[in-house]
Length: 209
Image (cartoon, rainbow, N blue to C red; front, side, top):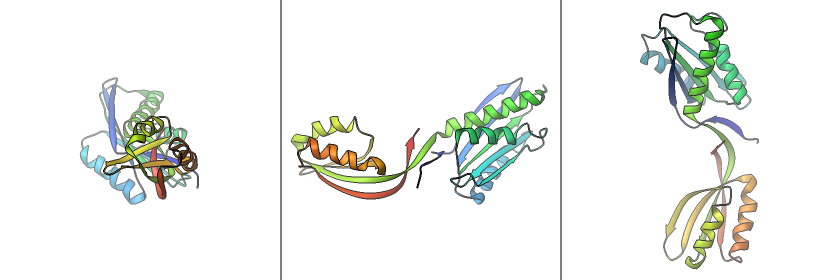
């Protein structure tokens, strides 16, 4: 199964344009109930806001797309937000852009730019990650080899999940499944076959873009 992009966490950012305050919220969601719950939480938090516009996608192929202008002129908020999400290829996410009107009309073009930017900064704050099939490599090496192994790991596409110092050095690596064989070969070669390595499929894991 191919990799896909989603969000690491829920987060927000904001900006002001022509006295209007825009707050972009973004969150990973797994289904429509979660998306609607996230939207509802923002609406409750900003009951006094002029608008709470939103866009969300569900499914690794973005099979479900929903968006709303929430009272802004048609096509100036929800759809531009959705276009930002589509361009960045982020699925299973919900973005809400809250607006507090500052008394200066922005015009249709200004609204499109503002809501697009609000969506973009929300996604940036939540951090886009790539979900990829990942293995755990459970490894053990003798202490005299550990410095060389650490140096090698710094150059390999791995995440060091855990290190334990006991009779030997035991460490757990997270490795993309596609890289698992290469990483195993490199460790085996470096240690002349003295490293003990056990591969365990770990499922889907977030990797920074």
